[in-house]
Length: 151
Image (cartoon, rainbow, N blue to C red; front, side, top):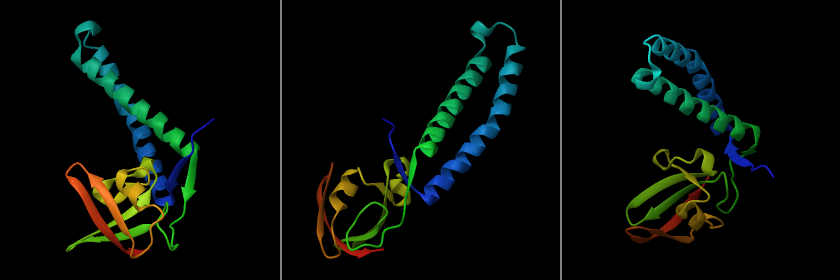
């Protein structure tokens, strides 16, 4: 059974853009490999090894993105009364206020404010409503956040 990847429409567009960029690099990598082959003995040719490694990484990422896009289920922004996949949520702990967009694991990027619904923070928030307290356990200890806004 194939795995469905839940992504937002924005996440899908970002993956499509990355896929186009990676496919565009194929020609340059092939040129590097051909140039490195011209240096002779491949057994001790660092340029050849580096070009082949780059080719492998690019082809792996292309295959990964194509699989995600082929099995993507687009999630809509959620404006319900409780936190769920697609929700934008604002949290408050003391004077600290943070905002997150709850997304699937494929497009999670905590530094950009996108957290996975499968992450510890995402799991603690799921199903909560405005005014609810979410207790999030981190390596530094537990933190209580009040949900102040859903969007």
